[in-house]
Length: 575
Image 1: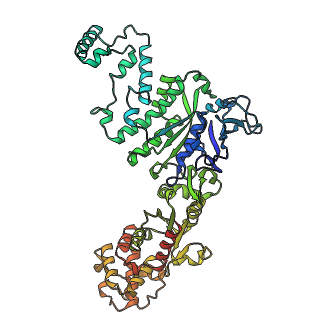
Image 2: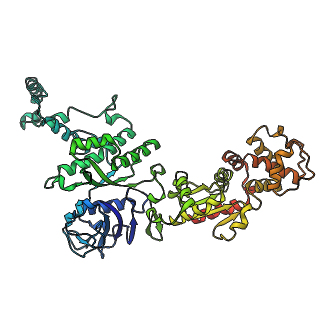
Image 3: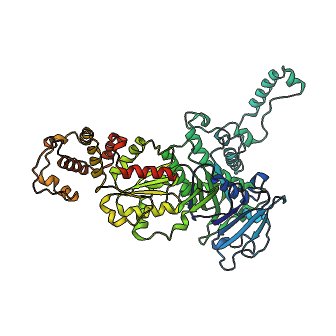
């Protein structure tokens, strides 16, 4: 049982919002205070069959409505009684709603219009983890939370086995110790007056809970680093919540399962993680999400063994929802992204799962291959797209020189790795409501002049062409030489013979009929044509991110080529 679609009306800041979900994993991104966690709260309230509180109403004159389309497999048909979509038995759409005047919500099957008991909604097992929970509480065996609940159940299972002796303590010694303690505590007025005494727990599970604690082998878990505590808490969470479902009073656990075509007993669940990256370094962030994905599709054999040991079930049928502010969490591709964005004074949402038919062939393949490189852009307010490595290396320095803080303004610089990749990237960003600015090399101007919105071209053939000309006309000849030396300190020993320069003379459309091989030290500073063309060739032959950084860090603000100045200013305006 998985969420295909949800429509939210009047829940806190979420109104008239429709979201489509991927059937396996969904990464919910966007800036702060847009309602990402509110989405999880709306789902939790609904699937827990809880009432909405007064603070949940965005408008107290209107109902809160949560309309959810669920996808069912064949074994799950009947989980909602006789209710299902008559046109498609593999789906059902439910409307969970409450008016401000009602004490409790109502539940209607949208497919049939029938009102159904609200407790049916609990057939969807929604399990939520929040990183705001305290590891000190969650990881104590003596608590009633995840670790305590799991530990108690394991101990109970051990004690209830058919074993001869389950005596864990010498009773005589315990009684003597108890007497010894109380003889001393009894000297205190408050203890003797109210007959307060030290007692030994009658319940063996309670007794043993105080005997054991979690440790990394050197320290108690609460004395380890935050990262260790949070990874332990996050991985315990799902078993803890299944345990709560397993032990729930008035509910037959076996009725929450379905049997698949192979006779396997499967528990359908939806797992929601709210900012699981807290206190975890990048590798642990990726490892945690990979772990959740593997257990939800039954690829972790040890977890399957644990499910069998503790609950007598064979696997899970899971869907993953993750609210995150970390690009490291985004492990799949753009179809798994759900992006919240500011839409006027409202919150808007774009679902990548709706994009699946918008890209085809080579463009789609390339975007999927590039996803890891561009995933940070889904958190940005604007994007500047450039063709190659040198521009990519330059732009952050150009922005700094112009007084534009890319981080403050959440502007991403994206390298397209070729002009043909720019349009698919721009279309992708546009779909996710991320405005973009494009800088093309001038050598492809004829192919892209029809692209008029926030598109810029170098004046010459490329960045290297423009930067040398711009520096030269402003008298920054020493800067040109300094950049060349920092690119490669062997610059003055290199012979620019015909073989070395021929390709680049042709590219720059320069006549080399009278060219005589020389070194850069042989070039006169006042010979603008030869000086500029040979330094351009040196830069071009050393294209790359490092060269871009050297150019960007050495170029004065007044010498930055016009197209880069205007593009960066425009990106800043789009934020």
